[in-house]
Image (cartoon, rainbow, N blue to C red; front, top):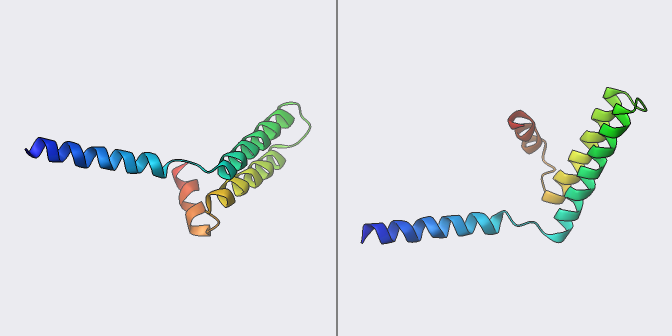
Length: 85
């Protein structure tokens, strides 16, 4: 009996995490745009077209786009994300 309750609770928790992890189409598009910007910055840096600092600035802009799409425009949230990454 306890095993069944535990299974139900674990399944519900996994389902709720799966639903929470779903991105909206707009968020997905913003993530793809941000990734493209980061790839462009890396390619330009590798080709010597821009400096490391300029590439970092482009990547920071890309992060801002992605954060805005996720609703994470709060400075505290961004600071925590940077500390984790």
